[in-house]
Image (cartoon, rainbow, N blue to C red; front, side, top):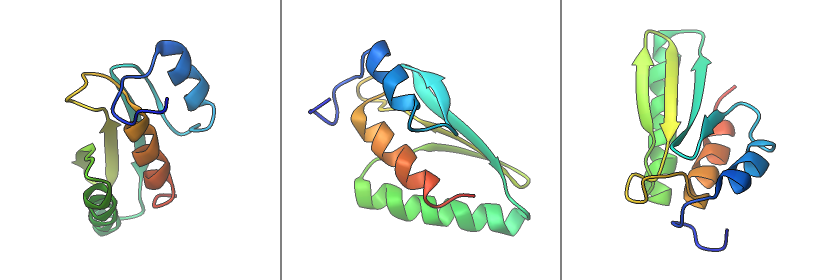
Length: 97
């Protein structure tokens, strides 16, 4: 896992998900949903996630349904989950309840 944009193997991903208990998925993408108290809280969370995504130059797929965020992280250019996705997922975890 020393190259941030190289796809993870299924075994590497299983190992990594141990440290990301709020996320699920497979080599095609990591997924997490979180319900926030209000619609405004959910929109504000998207703004915080966007700031991190811009900083890392790595962007999640975000689907907002009222006050629930559905997030997917995957390196589209690699067609798989990479170490960059793990890094982004960890940073997102630091922003959400």
